[in-house]
Length: 591
Image 1: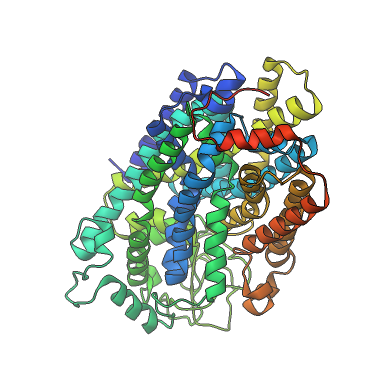
Image 2: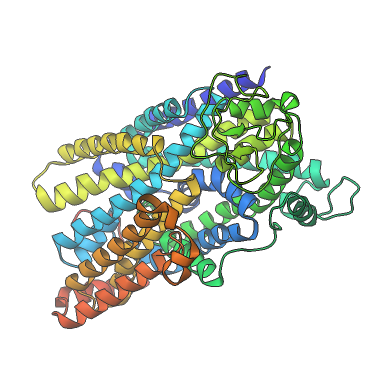
């Protein structure tokens, strides 16, 4: 069977499974729509949480970033994994014991303020839409290559699929769909990793293969071979880091703290029967997540080795089939600057602005690019880093069914997180803004309808952000973590562990933290990208790591304002005390 036929078959079967689960588990009440009735088994919830957590950034983009950043890319592994430990220990069981539906629910009740709830909703929407842009971009990239459509069309197809199972099933449908998606994405990630580890090192365990000797007779270990190859081409060594220590620390901390403030992950701990199950869920999720995260560095190194060996110095006329496949989608390209017909790969941006495509064969050597080459370097190859995991099986010439499996896995990763984020957005609008703020007399049926309408509107906005994303998938996601670290995490943390924190302090802290972080990121990424260099950064901290400073501003402003204003009421003291008591808790309820 041809590879393209297998791709259609695998992707079609996975979609049928997801939609079938959504129909079977259709939400019939707000309780089921928001928190799946609060009766999900901790192991099942751990698997669903892992799928919710391991987004397009984890599956598609993280290994691509590590492949090109090398040592510097380790911040993503450390931050995202370490953050889960923080979430499991500090927040998950306490929030579950509180027994509400959403993060704004907790903040609105803990800080006895509709304004605090509204500010939390605004923070949540900022975070979720920033995050979801990366997911929809990932969906578009997968569809564009494997279903042979334009990236924009791919995003539109993904919007339709997510609409069906998130709007119909709510949290109940999403939970069981995400269990299926976890199985698909993990199998899709591990199978090619095992194949390629065997091909390069003879070791079937990718984690061990990364430290093994390459089986090409050179006697070099994987990383030593990669270092030598890259240095020969003019790149820095793969194992050398270029980021400053403070930037590495801040990016890692922002990712860790942001993890503990991500609303679509926190809400998963409201779906289990009791508080102790929340901690168990977090433990199981960490186990399931570790399976992919410990494999990613090996996938990154193997992908970079395969890519450099198959491209550098190869005649364009003899370029492998995978190169032409991805070139047709505008995600990889060649501009013959020196006219020798061979692909010279090295440091530097090969093009001025975005690559511009013409019908195949119009370039001097048959390449598809117009003459917009950068003249200040010799690099002739353009590569979208988000394709490395998806293209890896093709580059390594693996069987067609493995390529089809990776296509299904990439879609599972992106769609599972997109659905979780859309649910968080719709819940914030229907439950927090309507029911608890602007229309408290709304019926349950009306609230459920509002949630579905909000999810539909959110899908449209998410699709637009996916078509016009502000950066690579993993970079966009990193910004979402920074916003979460600077806005929601301090309010949740102080709400649990500090009785003195009042509504005025929490509101001032969230606004100042979110405002500073958003403006800093927007300045360097949107308004003044040419100034985005270490010498212009505050304290040498990049936009990816600035969430830590935003968090410190949040804490400082909140504490200062709280000291200057009245203490919280006595019933809030009692509420905080009850959250901390390590005994069982009832199901999620309306308040």
